[in-house]
Length: 269
Image (cartoon, one colour):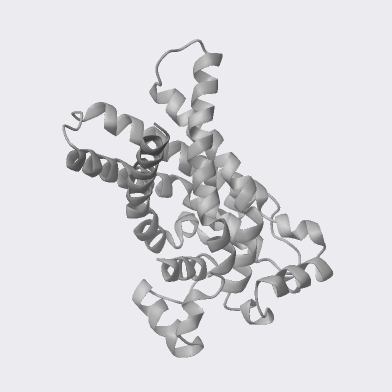
């Protein structure tokens, strides 16, 4: 799945149209392998790999805790659709605070233009700190908050809605299928909603001083600039490889989480 993330980043960093740009997922894979080598499809994998398990665990745990908090706060006994969305947004914001720096390190290593400047994860940290200052490691934090808040709000909100609409599962097989379907739909809708934030985040985190003055410094400023200079479609660059990864990925995530939770509960009883 990670090579799709590399391709997504390459598409999001393409500005305008013209020769030399990727025209499709297949074209991107073919050219990256031919021009840069197969290993380039896995460049930058270490930072996200190190936080993958912790961030997923924290997101689901935070979602549960925020749910309890808001039920108590609003004097409610049962989760509703608005509560599911609200807890999802808060869980996403919590997750975003953890992944911002690893995301930036990943983007720098994935970049075609400037990725070869770095010799690895720690070299990225060292050079950014020396050349741009330590705070540059948090470039794109606001857009990262938007990206994760929007995705998780849509994801958990859709899961609640779908499970509420469909018949309750009668056995473990049907429960697994329901979780996968609900998670996949939630992941797809979340990706559709948050892709503009992801595009802005990617471009802000890929910025290096050699590019000249920053064209924007915020999520809304980025959306406005991209819309004005490249058109609405540019806000959805990289959508296809992104949804191919996070659509079914959302289904797998929910299935795995429920399985692990059930296993841990059975062990504690």
